[in-house]
Every structure is written in C-alpha cells, then in structure tokens.
Length: 509
Image 1 (cartoon, rainbow, N blue to C red):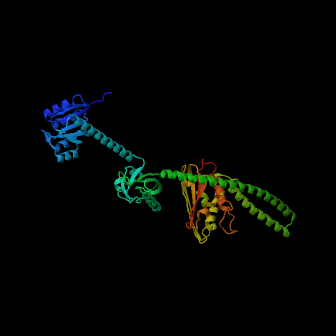
Image 2: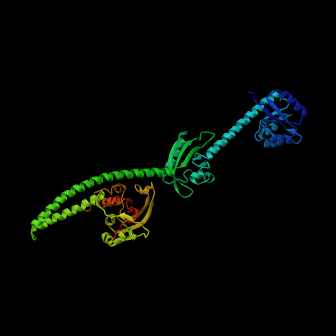
Image 3: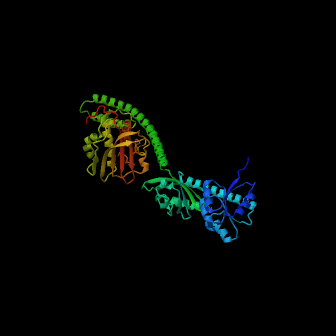
C-alpha cells in the first residue's frame, strides 16, 4: 500500500532557492506547496491541510522572530522548521522558544537534511499532540469521575480538588484550596484520620481505606469513604492522592439492615418465650381449676361462722391472685381473648386521667397532650387502658423522688425500611409517647425489659410481667412498642398502633 506524500508548505521569497528545493524533492515523499510571503502562507493554511511548514525568516512582509510567532499562531499545531541564511544562535534559540520545531541554515539544508528534520518535527508534534490529548482525556476523566479526587501535600493540606468535590462536599475546589484534610471532619473522627494519614506518609504506594463523617456545605452530616495512596516520591504527582465519595445512602441501608436483623432476632426470642409462657399459663390454669373446684366444695361443707371457712377463702383469694398472673402471661404470649373495636385514644386516655393521677401520686406531675386529628385504631379499649396504666406505673417506679410524666399523642407515617420503626409495615399510625424524667436505663437493661419476669426491682416488689404484658397487648393489636432511654436521662416508651382500616363498631367509654 502506497504511503501518502507529506504535504509541506514552503514560505520563501527567493525563487531560485524554491526551484532548487523543488528539484531536490522531486520523486521524494514530499509534496511541496509554495508561498512567497507570510500573508500568502497564512492564507494557504486556511485553504487546505499541511503536515509541516518550512519557513524563511526574511520575508517581504515579515522578518525575524515575529515571523515565527505569526506563523505559529496561524499553524494550529502544524510543526514549523525555520530556515535562515546566518548561523545566529540567539535567533535560533528565540525561534525555538516561539514555536519552531527546528532551525536550519540554508547552506546546510539539502533535501535529505530537510526531509529528516521534517519527519522528526512531525514525530515530535504528533507525540506532543498525543500527550495533550491524553492529558485532556485524563483531566476529563478526573473532572467527571463519580469520586472526588483530592491531592494533599505532606502536611495534609489540599493542593488540588477535582470538580466532583462540589457534588460530594458542596464546596468548590477554590474554597478548599489550602485547607487541612480535617477541616470538615466530625471531631470524633479526626484522631483516626490523623493516625491513618501519618501511616500513609510512612508507607508509600500502600492503599489505605477509611470511613468518616464530614460536614457538607448545606450543614448536614454525611458519611464519606476514602482511599488514599502516598505518591509524594513520584515527581509527576508529588502528593498524597485521595479518592473519596459520599456513602451516606449505603450507611443508611446498612444501619436499617442491622436494625431489621436485630428486630428479627428479638422477635424470634420473644416468640419463643411467649410460647413457653403460654404453655405454662395453660398448665397453671388447669391446676387452678382444681383448686377452685375443691375450695368451692369445702365452702359448701363448712357452715357460716366455721373458722375453717376463712382459711378456705384465703386459699381461694391466693388462687385468684395466681390467676391474675396467668392472665398476664397469656397477654404476653398474645393468646388472651380480646374484644377489638374502633377506638379513639384521646378518649381512652381522657377517661383514665384521674386513675393515672392517683396511680403516680402527688410527687409526680402529669402532662397529657392530645391531638384532635389523631387517627382511630382497632383495639380492645380495656387492654389499651392496661397498657397505659402499666407504663405509668413503670414511670412512677423510675421517679422515687418525684418528677414529671408526659403523655403525647400524634400521628406518624411509617415508611418501609424506617430504621426507628423496624418491624412495622408501611402506613399511618397513632402514636402514644410516654416520657418520664426518671433514672433511665443502660443498654444491657434496655435490651431485656419486655421479657417476662425480668425486673430490676427488689425481691417482692414486682413480678416482672408489667412491660411484658404491654408488649403482648401492643403486638396482638398489630402495632409496635419502642423504647428510648439513657442512664440518668429518663425514658420514653413509644407505642405505635395502626390506623383502623374501617370505622366498624366503635367502643363506648
């Protein structure tokens, strides 16, 4: 396959020299095009494409370095080989500085020398063009990368940011220039980042990954992930290169997944305990049935006034107290008989306010915040009253020196994967928050409070079934109960009951 000749523009006003070169190039791989002035040469550049330019610096309309400058401006990267009649080294150097690829004396520049010079000039120009294109592609890749790319000096200060940093952090590269890498980090994460940066300085070329929290320009705290590599020893880079991105969405999903897994584990545990409690309650009820039967027989045998009759009645009262415990166990195991109706929680709480005040005593203030727009729920009104009474009693016991009990009602829209409401299906819920200013609970107690017979009270001061009963009733109603508490900071129980699907029968209070 024939190689296309090199298209060369010769800008030269000496006709005899032009004829000489044309004769020497005849039959070579050079196609020569002539212009006898700078103006004509610049015009021809716009008429067609050329591979190289041979330029004389002594033209009728231009001379010296100015000729190189003007031709270089019009050439658009086409390599220029300069020809002069004198061996002026200063002029040669200036020509190269202003865009020429080579500088030759006319007396030395025969066809072979010129062809070699032109080819070398084209190769260098091609290499530089490829280098510029590569740099352009690399910069476009960096600037449009999903990750932000940051260069840090050995003191951990920003010397470069890609434009992606605006999307990741909200700040422009100009705003971050010169800032410390710890500038926007959460205070708790700064020691970790400082330690990892020091390690990075001591271990060149080793990639280090770290997660951290940072303050976005919009004022929100986000999660970030970064991978840094020490390239300070590389003369072309001389920086610590950091690729970083916003991973907040991923962290939210991971947290939700962990919460769901914990909720599932807790639900399985409570289900197992519930089955055990239900079985024990049924067996215990069978024993109580026999006790009830025989006490009734004895009472029928003993006449009024018989001292033995009071002893039998005491046995029966003890059996009734035991029956109360079995009812609580059945409530926890969600096997008790309920009479659900569409109810208004505002009305239920309003109807037992006096009872609540008597239950908690004079040393504890009671605040109730109703919501006229509260959605109605399908529940057993009596069981909901028991839930509220048990939560109030629990709050009272947590405030032996007095305090404040606050009950707030509101609506809440629960979405799928809501971390704070793990285990609930999407929908509208009536929420009752019961908050005390008591002693609060550490995590190791908080994790067990709904288990039957679990209590932190002294022996004889509680059965450990109050919150277990609450848990069972709420779950059997189709809702969920959550607790927020820190030691010394009080406790909030959050009861969520789903909105009634239809109006149905309504309870009368």
